[in-house]
Image (cartoon, rainbow, N blue to C red; front, top):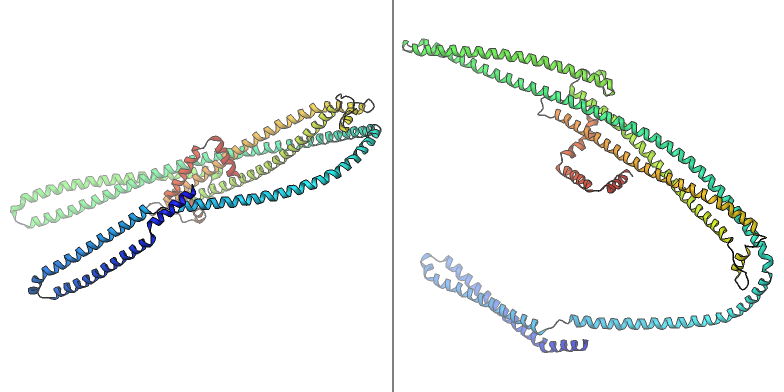
Length: 573
């Protein structure tokens, strides 16, 4: 098949005629260069004619314009002819190459594959020849070894016959030694297992007491967290709402008072204008007496309006004074609330009574932050204790695995002791191992093995029951560990909620410190709080951070319960 393809490929290239194709290409290239030269000459001539036409006067331009246009038209025709000839030549060459030539790459690839296949076969044959030579050498060496082994086999047969004649005397001694050694080993292992079980029970009691202590500490911390969060939310919400209401009322009254003052000033200006107009009208002629009467009536109406506005102004002042008294009462109530907070261990210092409310709120935030840091330290301490408990649990599990292996080995020994007591036939015509197993049933050496089997069979259910107790206790410890992990995750959630609430409180403080606010700015030392919460506050303002947090919450909500537990365990470690 490959030979036919090679012949067809050679025939296609012979029919193509590469030499004639090159000559055609040379002639086509020469024609193109001639056309290009002619086009450049005509282009230069046309440029000269156009420049002369531009420089000529208007009388000479009109008769030579037709000649110039025909020159441009002839140049365009030459360029069109040149492009069409080039396209025809290119299409002719393209059709000849596409139709006459075949791709030689598949044939060459097939030739290469056949050559490589033959080379690989040749290499395989060489490897096979070398392997056959090596096997021949191995056969020769094995033949020589088999001859030497035949001699050794004859000697061994003679020794075995002599050993069989003397085996009955030494067999009884060997059986006694083996049974005695097995009994001693089993007794020592049982003692070790009992001692290790006692140690494990002591360790388990210690771990249980520590777990109870940790549970009590955890419950105390959790209750303190809940109480702290509840009290802080109640007090902060009440104080914030009252402050907002007070500030809104104060701003409304101030705005109303300013409007009333502006209206009063406007009426005063109108009164002065009316007085001026009345004085001017009195100096004028008597024909304007009616207008002066009208002005007087208007003046009286304006005076009545002014009196009414003055009364309203007095009422506003009374309302303002009442509001000031109300605000004083509210501030007194706030002072009482602050004193209550002092009694509940969230108080302010005694030297801060004369400071603004924002400073007091900031001090409260600092104290809450210290509380939060103390709770975080307690949480870290609980986590370290949990890590130590987990390491101890791993040690206990490894010791339990060792005990399980020892128990399995002891059970194997017990089963071997039970199998030794099985009945077997006579030893005639059997191997030495069969003879040894049959000889263990002899009456002279069987008393010790029977006693040991009875002791082992009596210890086996005790060991199995103790192992079952250890397994159940191990499962209980694992359940307790999982509960502690869940409680640790709840503590972390509470700490994160407390941090989030502190950030919200910091946002309120920043709002009070904003330039557009009418409240008093804080002049105290707040660099520590700002450095601690400014980063989180700016991240909350960043829309990209908010979007990232929302996506994380969405992905966390899509997880199932097992994946959430695994994620919480990974975050703990």
